[in-house]
Image 1 (cartoon, rainbow, N blue to C red):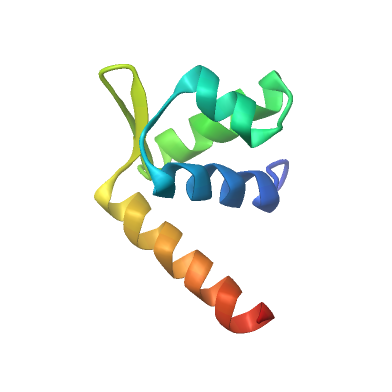
Image 2 (cartoon, rainbow, N blue to C red):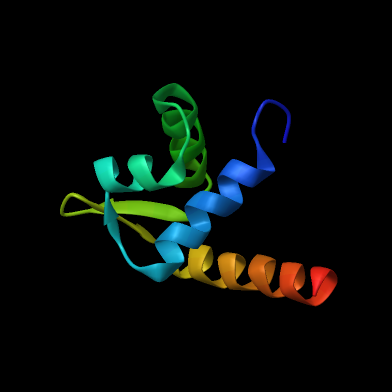
Amino acid sequence: MGRYSVDAVIRLLSLLLERPRKKTELWRLSRLNYNSFVKHLNLLVERGLVAERDGYYTLTDRGLREAKEILEWLKRTFQ
């Protein structure tokens, strides 16, 4: 992923898996500095995993599928 953090991507996907969130709330909960947050959020939007709708960021159908697969793999691997 180059200059992107896998941890940051997983954190954002996990937060959005819980429910859609406004950008400010998502940033605050992500514990990322703002520039890193924007960079990672934009990556997820560009890759079609996250979309902005009516002021809220939410997982797309693809994002929902991928997030669930990633988290299931992590649970299987590290439990």
